[in-house]
Amino acid sequence: MSSWTRWHGPAMARLWGFCWLVVGFWRGALACPMSCKCSASRIWCSEPSPGIMAFPRLEPNAADPENITEIYIANQKRLEIINEDDVEAYMGLKNLTIVDSGLKFVAHKAFLKNSNLQHINFTRNKLTSLSRKHFRHLDLSELILVGNPFTCSCDIMWIKTLQETKSSPETQDLYCLNESSKNIPLANLQIPNCGLPSANLAAPNLTVEEGKSVTLSCSVAGDPVPNLYWDVGNLVSKHMNETSHMQGSLRITNISSDDSGKQISCVAENLVGEDQDSVNLTVHFAPTITFLESPTSDHHWCIPFTVKGNPKPALQWFYNGAILNESKYICTKIHVTNHTEYHGCLQLDNPTHMNNGDYKLVAKNEYGKDEKQISAHFMGWPGIDDGANPNYPDVIYEDYGTAANDIGDTTNRSNEIPSTDIADKTGREHLSVYAVVVIASVVGFCLLVMLFLLKLARHSKFGMKGFVLFHKIPLEG
Image (tube, rainbow, N blue to C red; front, side, top):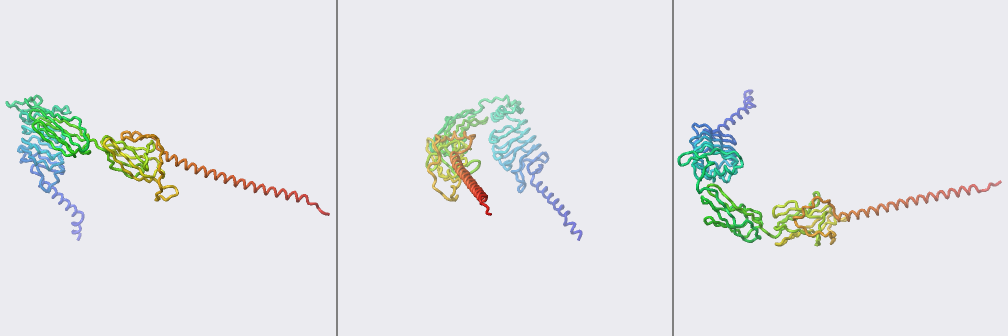
């Protein structure tokens, strides 16, 4: 019995844990390629024998390859090629090192899905050529290519250009072999008819009304002859392009207001590098009030709104059908501006029942206008149930001579002292009530004092009279 207990107690738990640990290591070893070691985030292959002949891949059911952030390969003389699908599974890869190996060829799309790559080290391999197309979509902070037998040609001129344009003063000591198998410093390499291209866009300023169409033209030049393409980002409007030799056009139709502020680029690209010319699209359109809500209370009462429009629209508020002339106490505040979209509120300080009513916002520019209305309830009327809905007065606000607000001018009042004329009126009314109560109290107190004095005087008079009569009675006998 004691033996059974001993084997089914803590000792048994430790044994099972050890077994699972062994199984885990065994499965990891099976999943990791021969001559390599693997962890949850790293693969390193540095044993030259037997070595690897292909880029290391984790076996199915192994650790998630997306969690691999570093791959280190060294002394692998039989590793010659990186194919298009060799690295795509390692989407989280940040550091790739292949040194002192036999790497000769890297497929153009090998790193197409590795957007997180930051450091690449291909030191002392067998690369004779390498295209910039491998890396143009990557935001690399380091690309080390020292010790490769590059062939002196236009295909590697992009490496020289990259070295010349780097912000870091540190440059690599790179060489290439000419036709005589002589080492030429890459910094001194001169290749005829091999230079950066140029792009020229014909529309430096592009302003168009919503719903209209526009055509952009672009010309490119360079040797080798560059390819021309358009970079339109996430353009919403329908567009199509045509390219003929070194000329291109882009036709944008039924232009949407959502595309205002977006950048359109014409790009020229060849073996050496690329050039682009860009233009910002400006779309003019009528205002739209996309959001208007009932008032909310924070530091001040706020009727929130969102307005879109370009050029920036002027805003005018109406209260119960009459123009609401703004002052420093009741005014429009713009809190966030996002190109052609404005988020703000009508700010009211200390509103009372006198401010209850219908508020309408009108936004207008040269292309049209929009309006929306909401009902606001700040507090109930005195003596009336808060759920009641009495008739609102027609005119509450006095004319302060303030014109309609342009959105650009409404953000300059944030330091003014908050209050309202309505609050002042209400305060004066409350003061009048208090004065009447105080006066009535004083009058009542005076009346009580007078009555007390009269009563006291009456008692004193009767007492004296009785005393005189008592002393005047004659005594008989």
